[in-house]
Structures are given as structure tokens and as C-alpha cells.
Length: 118
Image (tube, rainbow, N blue to C red; front, side, top):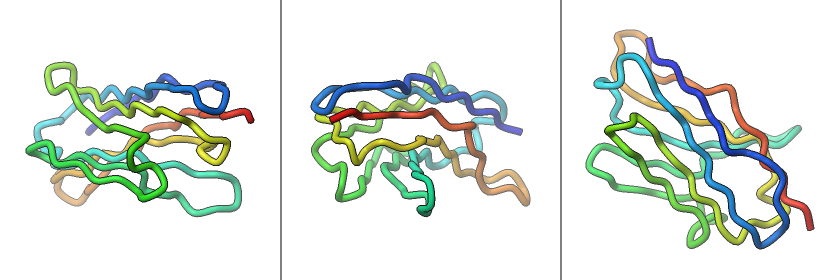
């Protein structure tokens, strides 16, 4: 079992910054990838950023150069530093971890709202 708790969302003006955190507890040794997704009403959940074992990161084109995903293994926490935010970044942001837990392949957090005003 793995439990994820996101924090750090809120309201920010366009051009501002926010840092999201996702604290992970439980059987974290089986994790090989950590992701941030986002979703707006009526749209599919979108993969924003990924960090895998070894620290390799990938980003959606829409956030490249503005968002940075990182992790602190000692704290079992993954972060998403968001800069130069735009109104179109407004969404609920979800943390996801992928690993090997028998028949379970990933876990999701509850989501945190990010609202960017113009």
C-alpha cells in the first residue's frame, strides 16, 4: 500500500510561481517513476512531468522551460516547481507513482487545485 498527499496548490496571478509537494508513504521501495498530471473539467487528465529512478525527467511541451519536477528521497516527496504560470495552467494537479506491487501498478493522490488569474 502507498499513500500520497499533495499540497501547495492555490490562487496565483499570471506570471507567478507555485510549488506543489506530494508526500509519499508506505511501500515506496517499489516505486520506479513519479508523475504529475493535471485535469480540467471536461478534459482528459494530462501528463505534465515525470521523474524516474536515476533522476531522468520529462515534460509536456506546454510546460517545458517553466516547470521543474524533482524529488527528495530522504523525505519521500516529489515536487513540481511551477514558474511563469499562465491562466491555461489552471487545473487540479494530481500526483501519481508507478511501481511494482503485485497486481497494483500505480497510486494516485487526491489532487490539489491550482488557479492562475489573468
